Amino acid sequence: MQLLNPEYDAKSELSKRAYTVCNFERTHFAFFTAVMFVIGSILFFADGSAVTATLCFQIGSIFFP
Image (cartoon, rainbow, N blue to C red; front, top):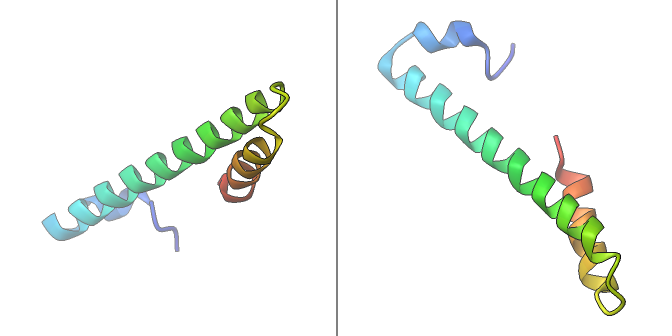
């Protein structure tokens, strides 16, 4: 059973709302983790930001779907 199966979109108004919210949150989370990964990767080029870069890079790497 897939959570974001398009067939579930046509069930009822409540299921349509749940489907839309799940899609939005999943996309938002993926975008956030990708941004954290990119920020962490860029921060590795600066000398004094190794700890912040590592933290951002790890958050982006671990949680990226």
